[in-house]
Amino acid sequence: MSDLTTIRNIGPAQEKALMGVGITSAAQLRELGADKAYTRLLKSGSRPHFIMYYVLHMALQGRPWNDCKGEEKQKLRVRFDKIKAATFDVERSELETFLNRIGVVEVKP
Image (cartoon, rainbow, N blue to C red; front, side, top):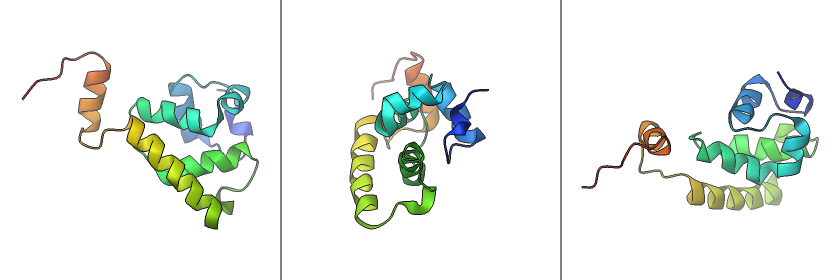
């Protein structure tokens, strides 16, 4: 499919998700960085998942996914929460989010 899986910790499922949001190469992922790539995933309707977020950071650093600990992990959690708050509406179901993204008009209460 692509060379995304040449990056440590990026497996077939994450490769498919990244390709689904237009990230089709390892070079492109490195250029975007973890925060922008993860933001794209959330904007596309992916559910927020902190482990996936920090695994992406570890992958781009060439480190094992479980190497993220302590203060580093706490700082990434703060960044994750900011990205999540800015891009993911916890009040909507995945179906509602998808329908709104494709242009279905939102019903006003």
